[in-house]
Length: 134
Image 1: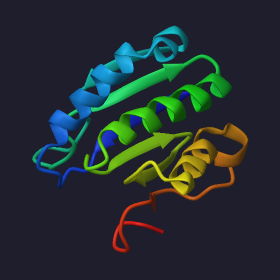
Image 2 (image 1 turned 90 degrees about the horizontal axis):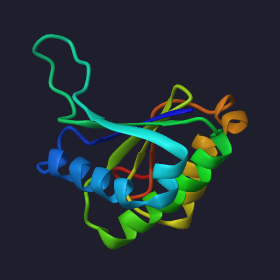
Image 3 (image 1 turned 30 degrees about the horizontal axis):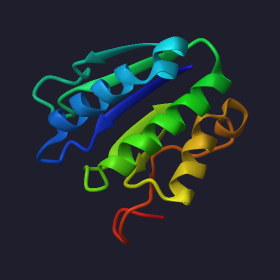
């Protein structure tokens, strides 16, 4: 399973947010044990605005991915509740997460469950205020 994480391109501190999350994930023993991870520049059309950096995580075991990523995201977001929204993409589906609420965690678990994701919709906003939430 391949998971891509990027900050909202409109966020003032998007690059710093992604680098901070990347460092957090690198220190997580389970993430390091079950995945290969890199920090990359996004692919974009000439002149297009996009995310400053993207975290790519490759898991050999989808079940491990769901458990490890959800736990790491929850811990990171709980320590940084005012961080900008993140877009998390897996199985061809993207969601935008704004917080570490129980609903956000359930939606993230569903995204990372290959069977559930096959029936989902793409590009959903999860959590946050009335404008960015469900």
